[in-house]
Image (cartoon, rainbow, N blue to C red; front, side, top):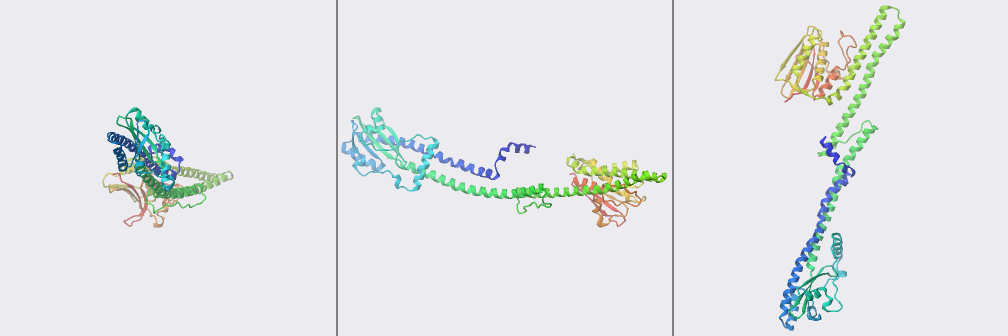
Length: 515
């Protein structure tokens, strides 16, 4: 019940096909891994933050170095620092006019990449950058554009540095999407200001490289995962569809012998399921065949006494001889009893399987049970003056079973032995326990059972009775019922000849011992 309740709680999964669920389970971790691409945005921000601090410090140190130098020395320092640090340095006087530019004094130490001339992968990288910025809600960054007028008022960071008296930072985007960091710092006490410009291409390259590597790995892994998931789904779904198709044909009953695939080459749960379904179908087909055969046998067995009863009743009005009328009444009475016995036996035979599936098994000492049955039969004089010799060997013959049904088995075996044994020959009953199996043997001294008939005696309505016994006193269901009960206890009931060579038969009940 706990497993059923657990399955009910997962009923939402039944809305998805097995293939969809396998794909979802395998792709979800990859999707979470792909989320690392967005985590790289925080990595980029951390790098920029460190670079801001470095740009501020560089601007302050450079401004201090320039403050006490002559104009010629300042120009030389601007060129030297610009080349070494790959920066552009510009000096503005107190009125905000540009008077020195490292890029004008010497060759530029860097140039912005032209997006038009770059390969397609760089275009894709920029598209991915914009997509990530849009998803994470990043604040827009202004583009880096050289002002038309080369004065301090064209740069907001310079205006703030001149006004507030300490260094300022401003971030812009180069045409290729890489960050451009401007740092402005006051130079000395004469109102001059320094503007440093650095194109932090390394940050962009680092983030894009990590993002591209992770993206390619996710895509490759995703492709492999999808292929493996589809392969896994196919190995599961294909046999399940075969089983479902066979089950539908069995339900529809359009094919008498539906072959349910057993998938012997598979040793996994699918193979176990296939073999279980195949065995279940075989058992179901056997049960249906048995029911059909049983119904036909019942109709045949009841038809004979009914025909005899009808003949006797129809003849009664035309018979005037009192003796003949009495015989006809006796025949009718006998047939009614025979029909009643048949109906009773048939009803019990049809209930056994259902009752045994619901029966509660208990610990039983088979030797004590047999002794009690023999004593009860002797008290009721049901042994017809036959003596029954009981013996037991081994330790206690304990089994797990249903006492009422096992009592019926023992009664049927004793009835059979009493019917066939001569009055002066004892019936031997022996119980043995070897630790693994408990066996009950009932040995009679009757005519015995031919070897080719030792299985037939357990068929329903198979009845070969002694000549001295009145016809119709047995239904032919006794041994069939006994075997059904034995098999329901994981046991067996068989017939054999006496091992000592004497005339007679041995019926053997074999049951698993209780350890």
